Image 1 (cartoon, rainbow, N blue to C red):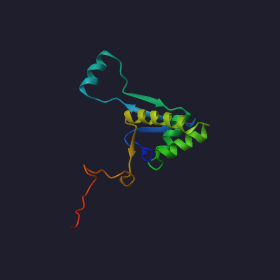
Image 2: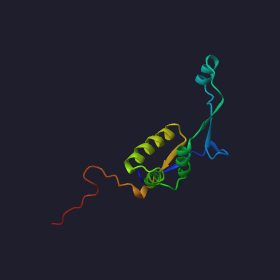
Image 3: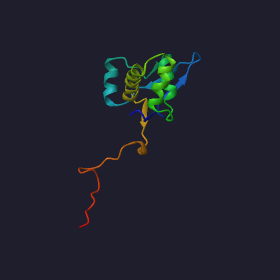
Image 4: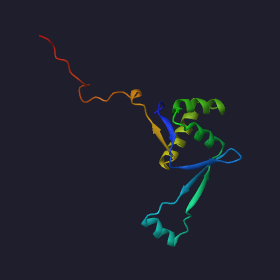
Length: 128
């Protein structure tokens, strides 16, 4: 997990405001459930989510190049947190962004351990 690299979803529209905050625009889905609910409840076609300073800092690091471990170190140093505090907070925030489909994670196959079946992979025969 710490070697994975968060990357922004290219389908998500976002921009930086003059104040330096990231504003994400979420467009309402148009399916039959939403259409039905929108007749009963007011559901806006678009809404904007403004990230605070810390959220903007994390969003900027979700570039597909910076891995989670590096993000933890950067946040701990910038906000005078110990590593565990930064790790817990960052992982919870990244989970929220991923659940909303704002980000995804790039995992390098070379960084992952090889999966082997029962017996640990190939078996060598003994020469008699």
